[in-house]
Length: 257
Image (cartoon, rainbow, N blue to C red; front, side, top):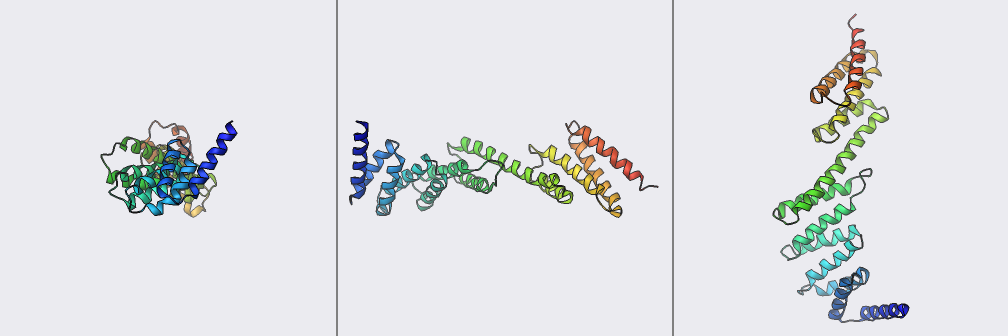
């Protein structure tokens, strides 16, 4: 019985799809959408949307069309069509919701913090635009939550990229990249650890330098140490930092004799 119902359903869809009646296809698409059959709604809407331009139903049809992609977790496609809607119809009753759904699509497509964060950066740019255009939107609480989560991802990725130079022993680049990270996130979640690692990197840079460069680079390491202790006097890295400080002061004694 269930198989016969499925055949009947497929047959009805095919009949509607072959029809040249735009209104019939639009009505059927809306019914499929209400039944959460996003695929069939999407197929029919894609066929008729060019024919709906200029008609009152066009904006709603495009919004539903974009939403079928979102519901099927095809976030790149949904972000494209939501953006196209609010750019094409900026005064539409669907403009604000479309812009929000564009943001949400990009947010959902944002990768793990371990991967490249290009999509995350795009999502943050879209969020900023939404906030400028609709500062009083009822979506702002959710927008702010997404912003915090996306910023946390970009901060973590930036920290990992900076720390990588230290892990592979390219200490000069580590000092520079960690400095850049700290300029961007001076009070972030990873700022304390980044400040300590920058000090470590400068120590190892000095240690591995030719003799004529060691004194200057050890003194620079001391500056990083003082900056670290001043900012984080109770740091969990304090003991390790003090051990390095002792090594540096011992080595600098050799340059005084």
